[in-house]
Image (tube, rainbow, N blue to C red; front, side, top):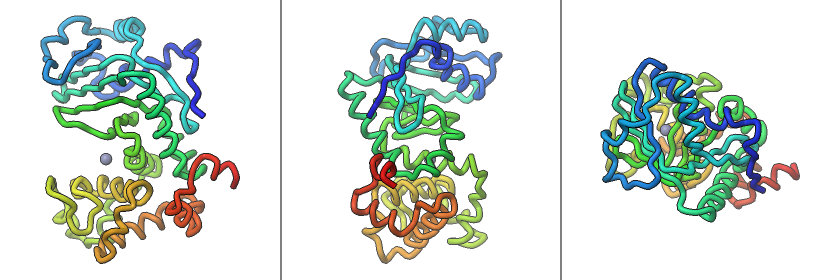
Length: 286
Ligand SMILES: [Zn+2]
């Protein structure tokens, strides 16, 4: 069940996203441009539009956030801060020259459908595992569409998790867990490719390379792990490539690593996952 949270005494917390996120990114002193546009299309986004309402101090940012009130807040899958953008938000960070664009849902039905999808994917993971990532992950931002530097994204993990495709939760979880456990990525890559593993990773925009779950997986060891987890838990496409020995070995290793974190990832779990039996009730009945 999806429960909408009251804002009551959590006003400050509910607006913490730009403050925490931006401060961590660039610090107070760096000029940041932030504006909420009631409705806009990508093509209309111009840096010039951001010249008004630029907060210059911590207090100004707080005031600005109160004025704009940009989120609805929900409780989903034990994550108390699932925030849904109420306005289309366009952020520009001058230091990195990265621009982020987040668009709001068109209506309440779209929001509730996405909340349900998010809940489904969260409960594919067992309780102990969920507790580990909750230690690090206390906020998820749910948006209809998300664009970074002109490129559309399904998910993003930068201090918080941002999702436009709820299934991408299973990818971002990998990054969160790596952060929590402080995992050594190199060991993962060396186990498949030896010490020259770097040769196997590069930017690739053309289809699934041999040994990888997707083209995106080939970008870096971290993305390789995240895409392998996503494939294993959500997509199940790895099964269509039984002769890809490296991919199969990665799936096997991912299963082993998950089992080490939480022994609920046992043979029965994988059978039940395949049978589509894993959901909220499944864990309640355990
Ligand atoms: Zn990633």
